[in-house]
Length: 332
Image (cartoon, rainbow, N blue to C red; front, side, top):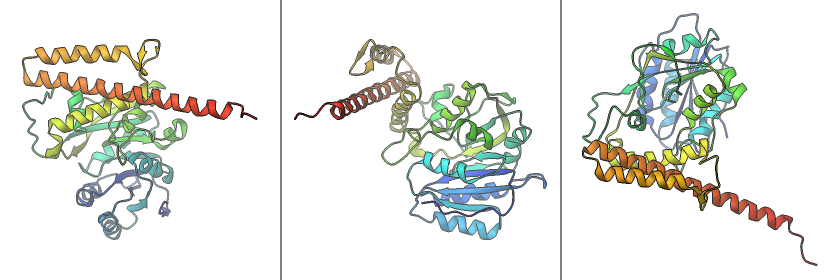
C-alpha cells in the first residue's frame, strides 16, 4: 500500500530518503536538507519513504510539511525492505534528477546544488559525492583506514579533493541520477538491500556498476559533502565480520560464484575453498593486529560467498526436482 500525494507543479530535483524507525535521526537529516541553498530557478522537493515504521516517523515528516509547505512529501511503503522503498520513490517522482540520502546523514547546505548541477546538463548519467564521518571519528586499533573496504563498512566514501569521472559506483548515502536512467536500466534490485532477517546490501553499488558496465558516465563531485553517522556498535569486530560475510553473499548474487562450474563441491567452486585456506594461513602469520584482522575479514567475505553459492545451488536443485515432478507422467 502506498500513501500518495501528487505534487502540484513540475520539479527539477527530487530528494528520495527512505527511512525505518529512525525518527530522531530523521529529524536531524531533514533539518539539514531543509537548509539547502539552490538558485531560485531550480525547483526541488524532498520525498520521504516510510518503510512501515512504528515510531514517530510520520509525525516528524508531517511537522516538516507544515513548516515548509510544498517542500516535503510523505509516502508509506508497507512492503518491508529498503530496495522496495527506493523503487517506490523512484516510480512516484517525475523530476529531471533524483538525489538520494540516508536518514542518519547530515548534508551541507551546498550539497544538493553541487551534486546535481552536473546532471541538469545531460552529459552525466549520475554523480556521487564525499561521505565523511559525522563528528569525531576515533578508529579502533585493528582498523586499517588505508583499506577502502573498511571504510565501505561505515558507508564512508572519499576519493580526494579533485572532481572527475567515476570508475566505481557511488554509495547510496550520497548519489544522484537522471530520472531517465532508471527508465532505461530499470530500478533497484530487490534481492539486494537490507530487509527483515537480512543485512545483505550492495543495492546501491550494483545499480552504479550496471551503468558503468553499459558505458554511462558518472561524475565524482567532492564539493557535495554528506556527514554520515558512525555509531559505536559499528566500530566493533562483530559488526565488521557480519558485514563482510553479508558482502560475500551479495557479491555472489550480483556477479555469480564462477563462470566455470566444473570444479565444485555442493555447488561451491573449489577456488573459494583454496582462497579461504590461503587467507586463513596469512592471518596466522600476520604480525600487526590490523593485518590479522584484515585477513580475518577476507575469510569472512569468502565464507559468505561459500554459503551463498551453496544456497543458490541447493535452490536450483530444488527447482529442478519440482519441474521434473510436474513433467513426470502420472501412473495410470
